Image (tube, rainbow, N blue to C red; front, top):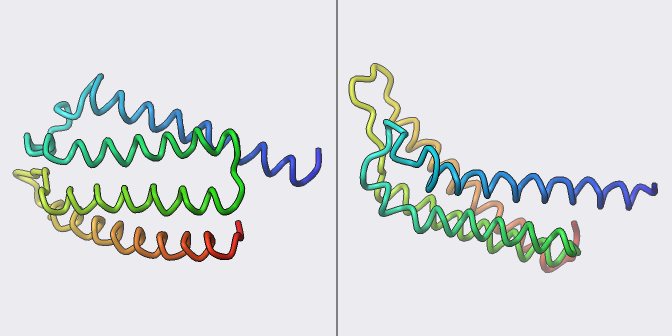
Length: 139
């Protein structure tokens, strides 16, 4: 097998794994055990589920497309779209903040806020990098 064929097979394996993880995430959130089973999530979680679901579904669809073809520019476009939708979800979670951590000695709310900021910064950087890849056609 050539290096190019090996690389394609490896990427395809990654796409399959990502699809399976996305499906599993949807099952865990909406099926069993369901988001309500997480004791740190408040009923306000319902308000962010559409954005979170959109991010998961867009990623799932992108990875299904990549299974068929994954030229560099298509992949870069997919990365821009999936990261932008993910950024919308992170901002929705930030604004709603559907978490509660009663009786904890550690400031979990602060940690979650810091992680959300890291996610926003990482998403913005990821979008810029993907746009550069889209223009240049580099993998």
